[in-house]
Length: 308
Image (cartoon, rainbow, N blue to C red; front, side):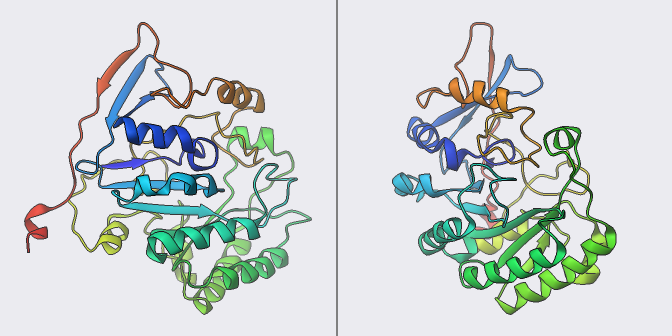
């Protein structure tokens, strides 16, 4: 099975001690975000967990106990964007994050690290020319650390519009121009470009539309074969393997204006205050009346093929 840490919050940046404590304990509990009294317990053991997927804007805190992860196959998607504190108030400068990405690439190999340049939006400060210039600078710095760059254009969810006044959609012409140039620049630095829940029309400009985390990506990383059950996508245009998320909405203190996972800063402050690194839950504790169910877990490894 696959454990995902990154759709709802940034566990590596803010909750690394909790995550390592859960690995040591051998299990983690997750509330259903829509039915909070329903709790799922996952066993954390490399015999049943084939991969752990991480997505982070600042994975540096994970380095302090990184040896705890060596038993697990893992894929790191590190978001490195060119925005300032007007957009990402508590994200480190991109050069600092690139230094951290270099360390992860050195530890786990460049095939275990992907660069996320997303979401892309355009305004008076962050223009088309700004993106192309800064992307080229960043790609040059990241050369050799990864072979994959993942892009997406900003999605205007209601909460995004509320938290990010003035943001607008990136037009189709702008998407095509940016995609063509980003693919060209990335190729100069040994990277291919994948789209995250983007139109397949961008394939004409060199963007791989298959998805940012697919079975082939995992097989290429390990050299093994997996039997991963088909799943119905929960997001239009997304076919990625992102189930079994152990994060919590409204718990990421980065404060990014475009974030789809936070409803309000007040909710985030409340969640962060309720975090206990020793709890089986990321936020809060198990309560009387909670219905805790054991997840149905098994390895996806195709052992028949692996024997040969």
